[in-house]
Image (tube, rainbow, N blue to C red):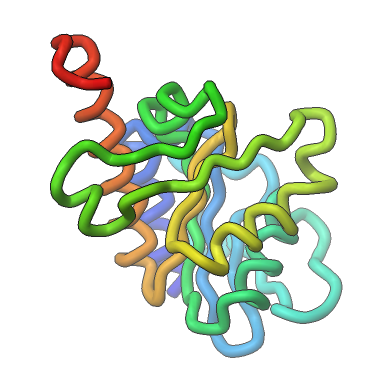
Length: 184
């Protein structure tokens, strides 16, 4: 499982969804989950770097600042086995206005006709994000935090990755359509 986490975390970097040290990823195994450490570098991360945490209970030292958010999602969505946080540039850019994102393309509409955008003041992000994002992800596989990034859960790492990639492609399509004068 931790080898898969390395691969998916590196793909988020490779395909431009994160910079070298941004985002985070986790996978659940029973009553525990493995999550990136704080300050993780996707280019150099190893399987042994991922930290094991309880779904219920205190987080271990050194985990990602979003580890409590991952924990809250796993509590809210028992079927969730993976959670990815990325900084998809088109999805973030197109939702800086705080409005929910409506994918213009067929696949986007098929997977998520409307993606919630959550506005959390930057100065209180760590105090509010876990509850607010978990609440949004209880009802949908993906959401966007305005000005920050995308959160997606799945029953597998592959599904969380699919939702992330599909949303960014929809956002890129919307961006290109607007540039071409054919989108809203």
